[in-house]
Image 1 (cartoon, rainbow, N blue to C red):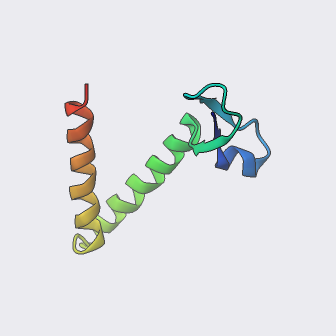
Image 2: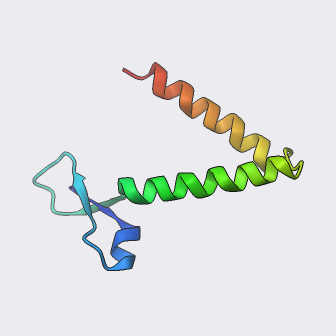
Length: 79
């Protein structure tokens, strides 16, 4: 299967990120390229930093921080 970045496709750039098994399958699946991933992470971090500075550490933002903490933990636990 071909992995394509929808963001690149939308911008008219080459969108192929890579391939994954089964390699003989011609279908597409969606992912995100490294450049757009960094862009999304930077915007997310900037928005959460702004929210924390304004004292909005309740509800959604505290949930996001717990969730990202869990993601960090799973990255360390996975082989």
